[in-house]
Image (cartoon, rainbow, N blue to C red; front, side, top):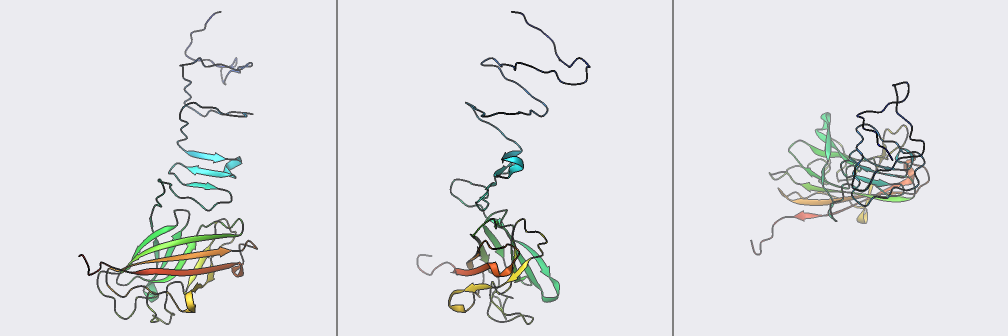
Length: 252
């Protein structure tokens, strides 16, 4: 038995790594530190008694084809819609992004399902909801995806309708949340958006409260029948609302 005490080992040419033909063993209680990239070939199992830390995330299958866990906590597996940032059983709420439709003083409300399935949006004086865009939801098979928005009405009482938040038409557009919906499924080639409309209970419309500071919770359900992700007829969107929430007069 003998030992070698050196700081660095290189191959014979002095330009590369050495080959440990029969492998190497790290004694119990000792650690192996790698400052670069550690690559395993033909590893059947990895058995760890402690914590495995993957700072950049985790991929299952080649290039993550089976699933991924991002470094920020987003979890996604083939056959499942994205599970965003699991924190116990509590869903994280993302802020819905908006793009202005200048001529009509309306906004496109964008719900990006890669960030979550629950969103918040505060209505303002000149930014009424004209189009709801639902994007980055999975369409690998027959599936149903939901996107829920917590709307907060503007601080002052709205008058004359707030775009698609009241039955009253604005700029020639029919009223009602979900009247104009754009679907942008994940990984659909040449995806400029599929234009459609939401189906509502009793074939009426979904409107938001006309009382200042009220809360409305609106859920969009997208059913894809699995018959071709680029075809509008293969999608059905339903819209439902639970709203007009404000403090009651009893006990306050």
